[in-house]
Image (cartoon, rainbow, N blue to C red):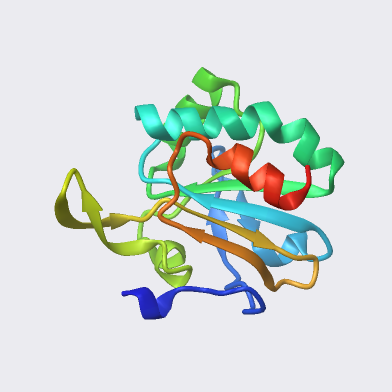
Length: 156
C-alpha cells in the first residue's frame, strides 16, 4: 500500500468534507494558504487526544506563521463536536466516514498495531503549500512529540 503515498511536489488531492458542525469544508477553498492536514484514527482515544491537544496548544504559533490546521478522521460529525468541545479544540475536525480522503492521501491501509498486521488509519500529517502542492508528508507518525517535530521542521 506504500505506492499510494504522496510525496513533496505532488498535488494535494482536493476534498470536501463535513466539519464537526456539519458544514462542508473544501481544501480548494483554502488555496493561497499553507495548510497542515493531519489524519488520526479515532476521536477521544488517548493518543489522538494527545496529538489534538498538541495541535491546539501550538495553534496560535502555527497560525501566526501562516498555517491552517485541519484534523481528519472517520468519526461522525457529532462525535467530532463532542471531542472538540471536551478538549477545547478550535481548529476544524473533518469527518471522512467512507475513508475516501484517507485513502487518497495514503493514510488508510495496512499497518502494524501492537505487533499485528491490521488495516486502518495510518496516523499521517501533510503540509500543503499555498499552491496546493504537498510540501511535507509524514506517514506513521507517533501521537506524542509529532507536533514538536513538525514545528521544528517548519521553523515555527
